[in-house]
Image (tube, rainbow, N blue to C red; front, side, top):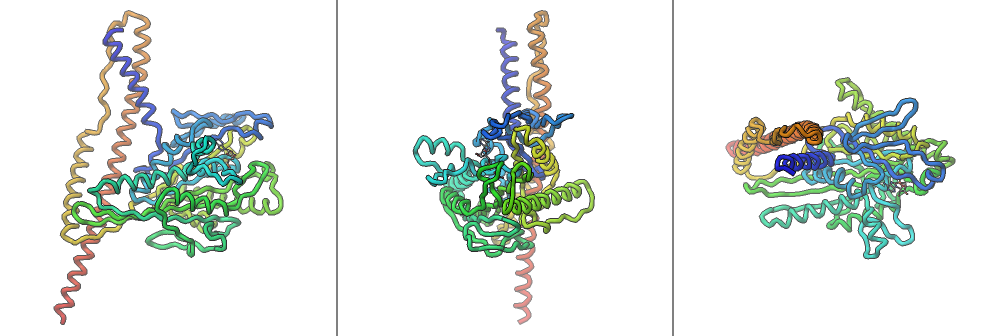
Length: 507
Ligand SMILES: Nc1ncnc2c1ncn2[C@@H]1O[C@H](COP(=O)(O)OP(=O)(O)OP(=O)(O)O)[C@@H](O)[C@H]1O
């Protein structure tokens, strides 16, 4: 092999590696839209027994899902798609990690599992069903082989909790950092349009309120202060045991309520200049009750009443999303948040001060094709919702220190802008094509392949650059907001000082 062809081989390999790594996470960063993920579960034994025909195809490169609908197949594109072989670990890395990072940065966050009953929402959020007799749950495994296997299958909630505490402990262990954390959690369910506290089953029919500063809250909901991931997961398991679970023909363990596990992370950091930052972020982890068709799930009696109330609140969710999409298209619309407890509680997450990721779970079986189409359409619409999340932060410190912090931030902002202008974030550093030895036919075809790869790379590099610019613009915006808040706090303390000295003069 010649040196030139070795270069080309390396070039090609680099292109392939880059195209994989640039595609695999759902950034909840500067893009304000709701991030939407679709996960297709493996066929169930019941589906296999009933003559399983696969009707969903996933293309992880183009992030698209194709439904073999007749007469015309339907293709939808999302922020991330996962087929039946994608592991819980991969889902966490692509979906859970970025949104948890945003929560740790001080943004309110919301992760919602949506989909037909039995489509895999609880599996995605929590993991496989806990073994009722043994009390084993997949979250924090014991030593046995069987438990290790279950541990591997633990879902997003236990992984997110592990990650939160891991990140906090690693920040605290950097001894030069003066930082304190407090973590609290609560757990509620909405069952037949009534909010109850899963950590205090006697607490029924609680009311949801809205506060101008802190957003939505549930009056009387118990909040537990926790200090380890294991303890937090223990609280979650305790609440899950109180959740309404019924049996329908579609799913042996069907969740009949919407559940919202909330983790609040409060942090207090003193920066080098002595300014104190206090951040509070709220992370909603939402496992919705499954939508269902009565014909398939054979609901009757109390199950039918539950199904009616589940479908009603999910259609209220659909209406809120529809109104928000209209607004994002410039129309003037009233958003009917108050039409259901679910939409009122999730008001901030949908169109407000929160980062939000929706995971749409679907079955791969043709038998469920209509529900899958309706889930994909719902998910497609949700992608258009635009949220405006800000870091929830207060600042304290003496005015001179804060003035110095503003000066430092202004300099950092100017440097950032200069950086963006100079294009120093560019990725366009690949070498031009070597077109030597074109006489050999195999060599030409190899070159053609490389050219096509390079074009692809160039496109990817451009997209990457654009993403980087978007990210930097987001950072600029964060800086501006931070400076603005500091200035307001400073003005307020100047005003208070002036006010204080005036009243002294009066006496
Ligand atoms: N990705 C997956 N891999 C393996 N098994 C899965 C997967 N997704 C779901 N399952 C299995 O499919 C069954 C139904 O899943 P799950 O209970 O999570 O559905 P659901 O959407 O929460 O249903 P419901 O709305 O009725 O509560 C469970 O037995 C679950 O373990």
